[in-house]
Amino acid sequence: MLFKNAFVYRLVEDFNPSIGELLKKLEGRAFVPTSGIKASSFGWTPPLGQEGPLAHEISGRILLNGRREEKVIPSSAINDLMMAKIEHLQTLETRSITNSEKQRIKEDTTIELLPRALPRSKQILGYISPGDSLLIIDTPHSSDAELFINNLRDSLGSFRVVPPQLKKPPSQYFTQWLLNGNLPGNLQLGNQCDLKDIETGATVTCRHQDLSTKEIRSHIESGKICTKIGLRWHGELELTVDRDLVLRQLKLESSDMIEEDPIARLDAALAETALTLSRFLPELISGLGGETLVN
Image (tube, rainbow, N blue to C red):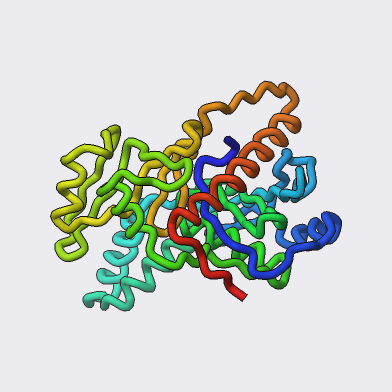
């Protein structure tokens, strides 16, 4: 699969700009590297490489590639220079430095070091599937998903999305599945889960384990709930789902990409990912009690 993670969002409004209109709007937020004292930057880069367009459409799905760049300054470098400045000021003025002055010196030191800091960047892929009313973002971090959405909204002027509004908390279903082993449809238990005692905060992390054992059930019977569960679907898709409906560790066992051309390979991978999720998500959401549509 092209994606290893999936933050899932519903499109609240119809999404139907032409690809030309979309590209024009994305160009206004194209990626610009950090420079000077600018600490971070985010913008759109071509999914197909440097010379391609800022969006790539295949089978009705639109692939976008966001790039996030941040300058990294080691905390030790900030502290060393800051302490040298504080000691110099204390010697010069023969007095103690207040906490507010120390904070200001730290901020000034950070700004001074930023132009010399090395940038660190990462790509964040996402695709819009208007036919499924879905936005899928490949990241394990909610902050990156929010950044992707906010910049897409800034680019388009308006872009309303919400996570699927489930009628009941997913943890209720995860916990029952572990307790009775009865999963709906083509879902099967995987080999990992996270359990938590809501009252005490105690947690149990299970990896590479049989989730149908008495040991797992005893944790549930003692009051713990399941906050993340490993699943298999149709015997070929493996993943974990957490209580916020974030999919991680996506793996499609039957994946057999043979395309040699990079663009053809990307097209095939996106089509495979989108088709799999368009079939899997309705079954998962139905198994979790369904969702309330947002107007």
